[in-house]
Image (cartoon, rainbow, N blue to C red):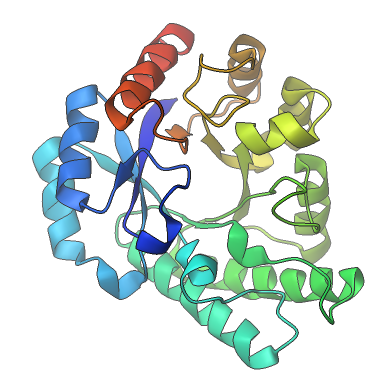
Length: 270
């Protein structure tokens, strides 16, 4: 397993769970200085990141690109894959595809989290799940065309009322026959929704393609009450060899959060 840390370039997301903010070059420099293997980037849109500049920064600092987030699709552009408006849904799919295209240039996946939306306000739960399944089916095909994967993240009940557990995500992906969509297991969301973190991970098995390494309070690992030892042991058991990525609040400050994450990662993973 490898370590990663988040960099947000989205002003509208300020206050969210990202360690570094606003400055891609500085974020990469700090990530490398702290000893991370990779960065996870959240841009306002695909055109906000120059691939040549990003490649140069990654090479300069010996980093990989772990994933690219699509959260700005909702936070900034108000696009949802489950909107009652078909035009908005189409725009949402196009936005995700553009992020996938960017990420694929670095052999990295894109992430769908908040863009999955929720049911209500004119959309029933069956309708919302149908819209979401349709979108993921189309995006699965796009991932196949790109030769990459897409990460789908179950969120806690306060952020979506659609899919909250890893088991529900597995059911959804199996129902649409997804081959290129993997599950992002976010330990913060799981702490709220899962009865047992290790059992949930074991149940999802090879469907897991990425892990957000966050404690129960969404701070760095070791600053809450999550017992990470059985979590990491189960990830090893299922053969997971991807990233543990710090999508966490930068508390008490970004540098302390980064240092704490790296220390916890080295203690647990080696």
